[in-house]
Length: 219
Image 1 (cartoon, one colour):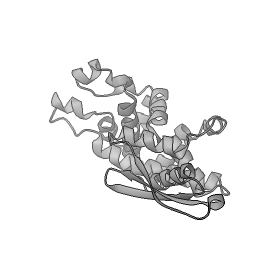
Image 2 (image 1 turned 45 degrees about the horizontal axis):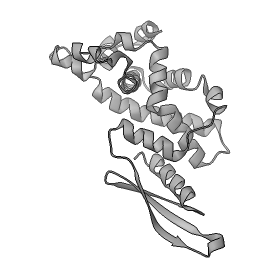
Image 3 (image 1 turned 180 degrees about the vertical axis):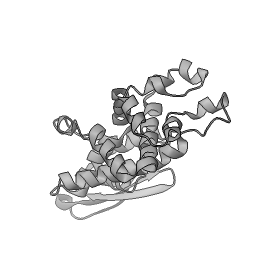
């Protein structure tokens, strides 16, 4: 499967770069760049394309649902599953130390490489080829994913924050108003130095909406 993807590349060097972990450069410093910049680009391309397709597929769903579903499709777990379908681990360029440490099966490393491949496809053949790849590998089992409970926004945000090595999100009530039978809570969630907010009839609902706001802002 990976051979077919490589064959479609006009610039094979971009494909090789997408598979190159930064650890490999310690032993091969002047051969090529690592895949970090491609990963950065691919992350943005993937989020755009998934957002576009979900907007098309679910015309009646609200922003909060679409945000959580998108997060379920682009999180580390799903990206690493795509990598395993492609048998990506065995083709990675890793240092001996990274390989001995289990790098070929590391979910975060595999997820980053999938994003790098998307970035490389975008540079090599443009947005249409990138969209074809994303639809094939991220939407082919969508009905199966929808048959299972989606992670709530707080759980999804927690996973994304942990994957980035950041401290856990901190929630606190900014304000509480209204009579006992009709309360309104405003909750703020802080991730590093960035902030998102949400409102709800109880603290839990407000926290979920704050998490949804954070996901929507890409925190």
